[in-house]
Amino acid sequence: MAVRLFLDANVYLSFFLFGKDDLQEMEKVVALIEHEELILYTNDLLKDEVDRNRESKIAEGLNPTKKSSFGLEFPKYFSDYPELDDILESLKKANQGKKKLVETVENDIRKRHLRADILISSLLEKGTVLDWKLELEAAELRQVLRQPPGKTGSVGDAIHWLSLLNQSGNGNLHIVSLDADFSSKLDAGQLSDYLIDEWAAHKQFGKVSLHRSLSDFFKKQFPEINLSMELEKDELVERLRNSGSFEETHEIIALLQKFPKFTQKQIRLLFTALVHNSQVRWIGTDSDVADFFRQFETLAYLLDDDLLEQATKALEFPQGFFSFPF
Image 1 (spheres, one colour):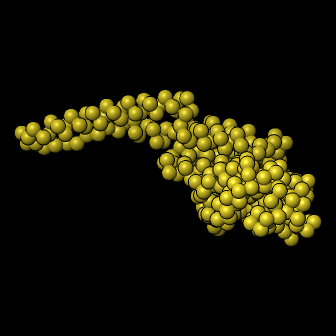
Image 2: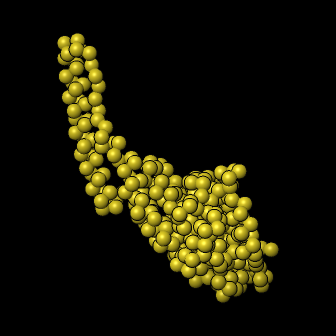
Image 3: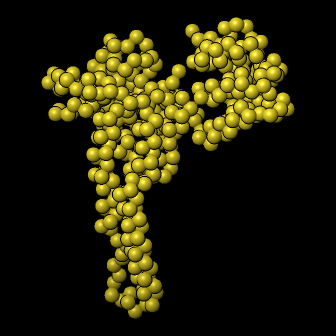
């Protein structure tokens, strides 16, 4: 079952302060959505909040850089040494280079070509958009009653919370926020008890939890994710879908068997290959192929019933073999 996630606006905005390696970590969210392991909830209000605060967040890092310059103070007697001229010339070139770099970066900022812009756009595009307009009146009432989450005079967090609270679906929900609007006054790392109780009263299944950073969420929920490994698996799955011979199928299955886990999207494509590629289906009863698909006994229940039925026949497994894991 896919993990459900909501990122507060401050998380998206923090991408503008991250370095290249940090942004690469954040790109895991995009990969998880594409592999159907993660459902990211967003709404138009959240997008507007990110857009409104984008310039000020970028300015936090850009303005001090623009004002700074490379320079050193030397005592007067240093001027008697020719090496000083070389150093001053190097500093001059460094300042000229910095100026050109800032101009290039500012141009990308105006065009929204920063890596953070691209990542945010991708996330919001792939997210599941919730309707928030029906929650406005209830959110305003929460403010009057001083019910969490959110700051006095702002209904944004309350709208986000109500949208999530009234979203149908089962499974745990994870909220990532860098401020204290959702957190307990006793423990900033935990969700407010009021919100936990409210969630329990509305939901039959699943719990809600708070994370103070996206990296913390990854460590707890997806500690083993490796983008390069996922790419390798994707390539092998695609090869299996297009396998042109029994021999090639056996070869690909052997390579796939070294991986201990597959995403929901990969599982769906593997079963599609089994059912729709005769070079896989016709040897479904071979021990290596059957053993490989046997590992999905309690993992393939989200797939289409017809696909599972055809796969069961191809593998000659007992009817209902791929069942819900009670």
